[in-house]
Image (cartoon, rainbow, N blue to C red; front, side, top):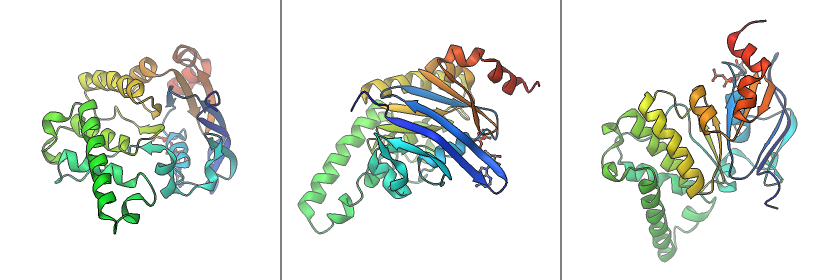
Length: 256
Ligand code: ATP
């Protein structure tokens, strides 16, 4: 089973009224790979992410995760299935500590787990302890140890982004969707992010799909790149292949 791609996107089409936001998109992602999803504004990147997390319906096509059609699973079941995501705008509780924010990410892991066990105290305690251990591991992995007890409001934007990462990793995703992780980061922080992505990919044997406008990061960190323009896939392949593809050059330079 491991030989087959973790994710297969097959002919996915999304229409909003007269607009075709995605037009027959097909690509696949193998286990352990980092895939960059690029394209000019309005190309359909966020729409594709929203299909993967089941926030949007697609009218045609199919998405298979570990060979299973995503269509059968509602948005709230996606995390339990093994797909985690971060958002372009941070969604953290600013007055709560870093550690508590990270812990919250563990509570959406299994559909029934936490609430289902509410009346069985010993197993709640066991679950809390396991969550605590997992949170400590993620805090360590993302170099948040020194700020673990500080409120998120004390942190720089770049550090807060790492908290969002740690929280997304608490659901132990197999596939992590990152929406513009480099957005708003300075040069030094982008470099740190690149190393961090590689570290979490190898330590957690994670598969990552990232939407990113920061070309230097995408081209240096990705194993494969998929390029969209006006809802269509215009290229996919290695970073070097995609970067040199005439349609990609044209899309970014805006020449006809
Ligand atoms: P950006 O890089 O600016 O975030 P993007 O590649 O993520 O752009 P999308 O946000 O997916 O692009 O948008 C693709 C197209 O679909 C655009 O024409 C957009 O206006 C349209 N669109 C996206 N979401 C909706 C919606 N909920 N209702 C109507 N149209 C939408």
